[in-house]
Image (cartoon, rainbow, N blue to C red; front, top):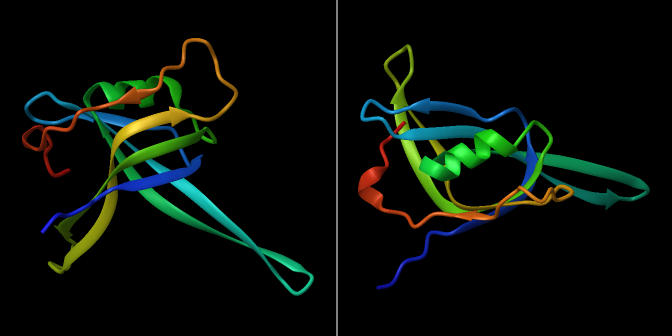
Length: 128
């Protein structure tokens, strides 16, 4: 049976991307994306912001680090991934993130800002 794991998001960066290297030398950038929804309830306008953790690997991570800043508007396409960790009490916790495969800047475009896509090879990614 076929499967599909694809996420498309447009939102604003909540903070500057943070980059690091894995033990085998691969670069990965982490950042959070705020996606806001607005609706009217009677005469009152309400707003809710969903925060999503995003991970960009390799060259895509380098581009994110170079061009994205807090407040940048960006389109991200990627796949959903759930990881786990043990908290201080030894309890297993789970969290979801988006592994970015394509990124497009939506702020006023500078001539040097690229549209970046990545052909994903599962074996290259490590759990962070």
